[in-house]
Amino acid sequence: MLWIPDDVARWMKMQLPWFLDEWDSLFWQKVAGFATSFCLSLYFLHRVIRNKKLHSCIQQKQEEVRKSCQDLVERLRTEGLSVPHRERILSLSLTKLQAQLQTGQLKCIEVLRAYQSKAMEMNEKLNCVVEPLMEAEDQAAKLDRQRSKKGPLHGIPISIKEAYYIKGYDCTAGMSYFIDKPMDHDAPLVQVLKSQGAIPFVRTNIPQTMMTFDSSNPIYGETLNPHDETRSPGGSSSGEGALIGSGGSCLGMGSDIGGSIRIPSHMCGVCGLKPTVERLGTSGMFPLGGGQTLVKVASGPMAKDVDSLVMCMKALLVPSLSNAWPLTQVVPFDTEIYESRKQLRIGYFKTNGVLAPVPAVERGVDMAVAALKKRGHTVVKFEPPRVMYMFKDLFMKVAFGDAGEESNAYLDNDVLDPSCRLSYYIFKLPYLVRLPLSLLVQLIDADAAQVVRMKSGTVLQWFKLAEDLVAYKLEFLAAMAKQKLDVILSPTMPLPAIPIGQSSQITAAVTYTTLYNALNFPAGCLPVTKVTADDQKKLQEAYPANTLYEKVTLKMSQGTDGLPVSVQCAARPFQEELVLRVMKDIEQEVKYK
Image (cartoon, rainbow, N blue to C red; front, side, top):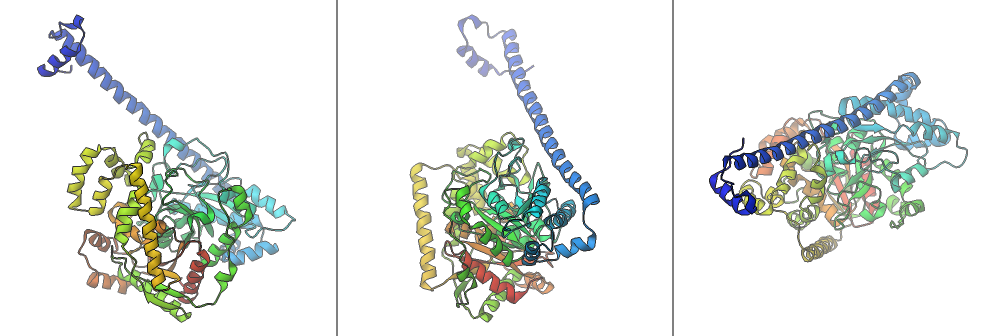
């Protein structure tokens, strides 16, 4: 029985009504102890029942998607293609695949089954597919019967990040709260893709909440890197990067609010484009953080090569996109800018002053600079202004402007993925506890300390943050104008793919990508090289290990031989065509394999 101290008992006696004046008796202490024990027992019983229901819900969803994949694998065993025919289809570039689908040399159902088969094969190794879209075969058959004019993406299988709404399917971001809440409509971009002839055929994995660049969640599990299964594919478009990088998809749709297209593209060795937010719109995606409008999520394509990105952008930038989502004012793709041979003035930097890149990344930038010079462009050094200020005082305060309140509301009754656990518990602490705690954390990691002491500000503070963000954009644009720059070239990340589950140790790495989210610049990346033994030797001999982040970078970069390295290109808002043109020039010269 619960024992109550005398001083507590005296206080309770003062609070109780007159008819309990015999409080001092052992009887009433036992009653109080029993009541307290009973309430605690009820609480823990509730937690046990809740957790059992939660795990049961997750297991049911896991079984549902497992069976969906298994059913598709069984069907492909009896109705699939011969191995040589499948490999011939998979070996085609997207432009060649498109040409053969347009002429009827290949049937849509053939191409679909080739990529379904490869996707399921890669999913067994990498866990990159959430579930197949079973209606894809009906769409392919319908397209094969079509006699009218074919769309530009006629018969092209396309993978879709789990964050996009697809009618009849859950959109969970790895959170159990959203299980068994199927969408009643397709996202506008998915509608347009279908109208242009594309066939969405699988949905791909994401990290829980999508606010990390990890690759796991309690529902669908951990996605692995196609080049090294001990390493992360990056996030939050984790499954897209892994599936495309392993050949299981030729084109996919990701989303990006801090690097979520470019980071997995870099780590998995594929191409990705984060457009200006307003270019493709933001409707029809997982709603977490949708009310935050200072730095918004951008939709964008991921693919094997630059031509595929261009094809996708051309197909999406059509009037039907505005019809599907009236708040998007479509700016059609400007082929003249993309195909122009006019020489450009390009600024580049190898380091942003926050975290030094490893030798392989520096070499990748050097290769891209040499390629652009060979194409006749003028390439000059550029120093991005105040990147640490951008990250700590602008981007982080915007991204965590509610101090995790919205995401924690969903995670309160969920199984926590390790990548979310620390931030969840930190934001659950009262601010008066977090403030002194941040002073201790400051001694180890200043960036982490800032997150620890993050709190929701006043409306006036939010207004001021918006003003500061605009001022920074103008400062950056002025720096570009001073050097008369058209495009900026830089690393995508300062190191190759990181070990699984360790993104929280290297948050400074995302300063290379978040820069262009804060600026709302279009930014794309493409692979240019792979880590070599010589890079590893230079890493040991010359990489600085002065700061905590540099020491972590040095440790994480051990054993990365053969991993892909990309570069990043960015330009002023609505200059996607210029970004893609520079990416294409680099691609043609470096010939990454």
